[in-house]
Image 1 (cartoon, rainbow, N blue to C red):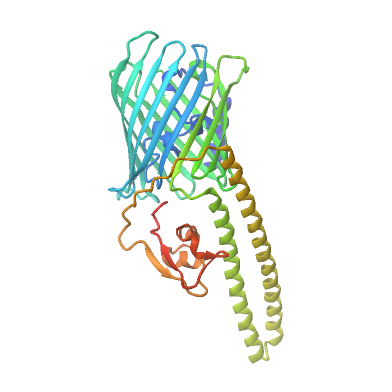
Image 2: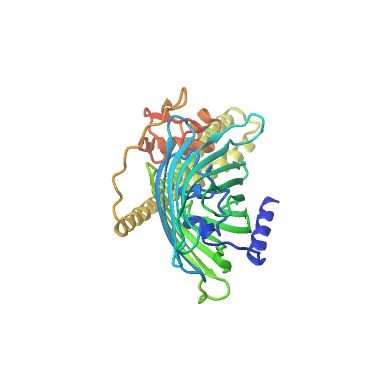
Length: 452
């Protein structure tokens, strides 16, 4: 039902002609948000999310620095957007994040605005509410400088933003934010954003309802994630500055630790109209694992899973052989079962060899892609060593690898969930050989919530 509701909302939002009065002061930064038609309140997944929902970056595991540049055309004149953002974990509180952002706008008709934002967000458990995951809450403190009319004197003001986000275990997210609650700048603030998003397989459907004095708009958008999140394609109804209807589309490339997003909007009723625009964002995640590790790690885990299954079936084969020798009455039945198991073992061994071959090819292709990317992009600045976060009591744990240990068996033992194997792999990548932990190696077992 949730997926159908979001698809219907997206279609209605794209087709229905809304009564909107969005202008220069309603624009917000971020190419990812622009590509999804500004439907970003329930997602807010990058540093520019603080301008849509201050709770978006709560509990982020990495320090991030991002920059954004854009341009929007309208009948009132071209608008240039420049923004930057920086967020990092706040070590005194385990799930908290602090950030700093700047957003500047300049329109050719003389309008101008500058925003400096100080952001704080963290996870919050509410005992009175039975939630599968903690809430994300956050707030911004703003310093604004606004020139509401061409040639007018700039007004300086202070403002506050607040937001909350909730997420279920079934891909459904909700967000609420009150933005630009400011005084002294002479604008129709505040703005209330109500957003929802639903992820089904590799598709995310989102919709935002924005309300303020003189404006009510519904912004739908959709995002498709390909190749384990390496590439993202986006579509939505574009920002309609000064009444020009536009269609938005964009893409994102997650070359971790570097993330690049780009988006464009085009007028619905002709590309020659003074409307539409573009934005480009670049985000660097300090200390984030390389995107190549995701592919190799997945292949290694698949190979480890097959190895474990082969070992289990081999043991079953030996048990059946012993039963065949000791129980003459069931010999014929057990012999048939044994033949089936032997055939399955042979098939799994073939699959295992094919998996290793594909893993080698994938590793070669990834190395070639990395060399191409490195040749096209400037070398990043040296990474500062991330400040160590205080671990929770009794974590991390250590484990001495025994014969027969696999990633999934260790995840089941320490987390009660074999699907959490990737946390152990990322913390001990150098202690694995062909997807299996090296016997005798000492593995670090991180806390389940750490880095999520």
